[in-house]
Image: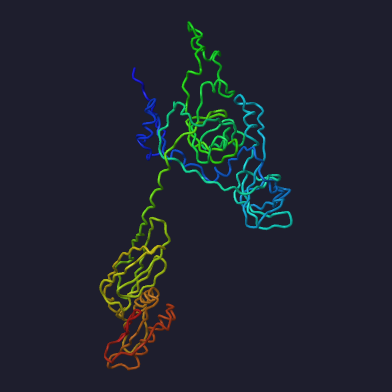
Length: 515
């Protein structure tokens, strides 16, 4: 029967390669086809600053203690401190402006063991220290340093130790490579996971763990290890094991169930569960972060040094993109002397700050931020082109034009004859028929508040010439005294003799001139 390769698509992004690099294919071809391809982004982009400076370590060398945390701003009401809080240190040798690391000497409170020899392996590797954060000294008074928390991995407590700030390099993620679930031993350095940050037993992707191998075995920061588990390991793991003789392993109806239980665990293939990268090395231990996990892992799982491809080159910086601009004019058609509002909207694909500028071939512009007002007084009739330009802080710009059509000035308003009040011979009395006509004129005057009225009185040749003026004045009196029109808005005149027994009422709009 032809052997099938187990193909599981664990690549988390489209960038993962469909086939492994040539060097990886050759390596896998020695035993069987590789089963996964891991891309750089599938490794969660490798460790971060927090992963490197908050993981803790096990060491046989006692750290050089400069002092300890003695309190904080809210002592004694508050015990722990976090980011951007004031913390007090007691000790010596503190320098203003210098950054220091805070660590905590701890022991594993878990009395049960996960794998045989766990406690002994931890003791052989040294003492456990958790990294709590870093502080920066802002003032020193006698043996007390006033500091501000720069970075907190956990709550900072009184008694935490102060040491010099270590200088570490953040390991980059390696390039895409084949991952073999059943990779045989490669003969390189091996060890096992003996401890985890926060004393966890179950660990997974991005967990921080400590190994039982360190500088004594040539381990270096940036080394990658494959995480492995044998079936023998599973049989001795207190959290994961099911004894071969248990009923879970046996079918009561089987003729010879012992054939299964007697099978040697050592003959089953070793499994590969994931990868980790070393972030810190001490004499007999190393701290690492799990960068890739197929399943949950346990303390006691094995590790094996592996060769990995170099990191992918950094992605080329995207080319800067110029901004864009769109404008409109409201209204786009105006009478000479009117205004048009120019409204623009700029956009920067790179999210850069923008400034606006406006220009026109005629008229007067009043810009304000992304808008402008175009005044057309004295501009003359015809189209006016307004150019709007948007510029970002890199001096990249874009421009657009809008056109405002200016029509000739509207004809000047003209006076209009609103009505005539007729009189009896030799009389200036305003009768009811004339009053009815004047009531309509009064209503119009109240509606056209900026208009005025001119009343022109006339008389026949046989009548007294002063009668013309009295007729005009009586009309004005009715409009003002009876109808409430403002007297300042009404002018009276005497017309030429022989014009008839009447008084004309003219409405003169604002801007019009009565001849």
